[in-house]
Length: 199
View: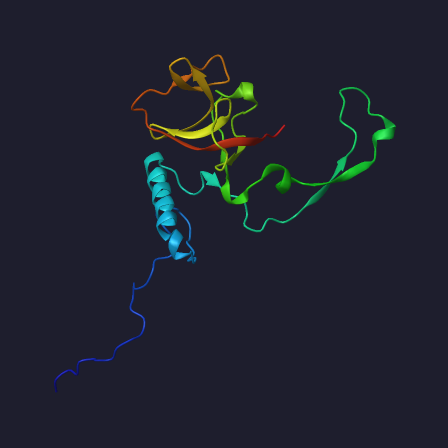
């Protein structure tokens, strides 16, 4: 008796469908809907980010983003300032409450966090392992501290002006400034707005 060919269609095939996770992002992905007019812009932004992550050997653990719905936590803010001497008994009243999300993050959609390494920015109060709050919406002007990819290497420096151009300035005399010359591959990711430093 001849074998009967199975002509049944449909059902789930092994290995079919979209794969969970991503080798580029190192985490599970989620489908979203975007307006058609913004599709090419969003795709371009994601492709640029993928290329940068690959070139720098980064994964999603290197950079963090604010929570989409951060928990509000109002903490007492005392009216008096802390002095180096003895506190005044008259200053022990609460002026208002403060939410650190409001203090540190002005534009959540344009903000990311990155951890610092090295000692080239000690003079600016940036120590190894500090968390830097970075805002991509701020224009990187002279005097600002910026996060940038320089020749495929991520760095934090102060943007300085010199007679014939710009340099990425260190804030430690033991480190040299980096001149931005013609042909230098430089991508500025954003401006550092705050430093979270443990004491």
